[in-house]
Length: 324
Image 1 (cartoon, rainbow, N blue to C red):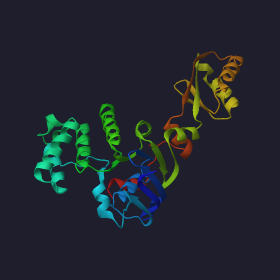
Image 2 (cartoon, rainbow, N blue to C red):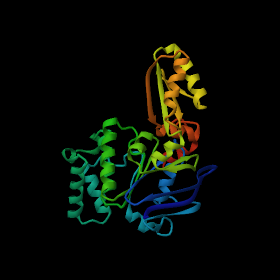
Image 3 (cartoon, helix red, strand yellow):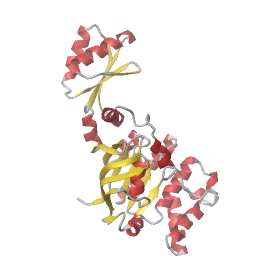
Image 4 (cartoon, one colour):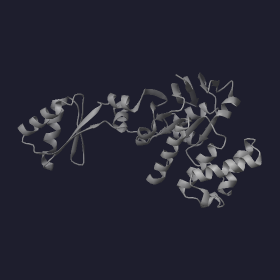
């Protein structure tokens, strides 16, 4: 198996904050590796190490077979990077932004213009090509930023929380672009705290919490760790919700969750469903809705860490957000 990215035991500190505490991860060529974690988990720090922007204090990493410390120049020729915030020049037009990148990469002027026009078409920005980027919407700026990271035709693309602040339509548009890129053989490392995003895009996932990898695998493998499947029951009467919770807890040995009158509990064997129906009938509960579904990545994350992916903030947020 060919790996485009390999990292082992990465360590990085900022003052007393240990941003990376022995992080190891790998991304298969032509796939999407999702790196999940709350704010301050160390995701951006890992990207900055892999992009040669900072050096680790321990461990080592390679991109395309090149060491990120010893062969930084070769690594930079292989990668593209889109950070958490659009990094376009707002005073330049869309086409001028991409031309600038092309010329900085050493492209002849004609080649740089051709690549800029190609990307503006691809990212649905052609009609706005001669407008200053400051007039673009958030989604348009994000697309222009992503286009800028692709001017040099990178083999490996880092997307660091690329859909932060985007509306659902713009987010879905970026998802489609990522799928197209991997279809062309580009390897994508995607950091996100939107677990639905990782579920939609990632072939493999690494979960980081407090600078440490706490789980890894495919989305389905991680879901199995959180119980695999969940039984959901909606009682006909709101007054029966607590009884339903007690019956399911006694039957499964797990603690059910209640959301909007729907009682949900993880199960390991679907054969428990008819037993649950019988037990609820014996308890006098009329069932209005009964369903079986896979665990979500949100539930996986909560099962692994004891908190959701967006409810924690640490001092590392300040350092990572400031580009340390």
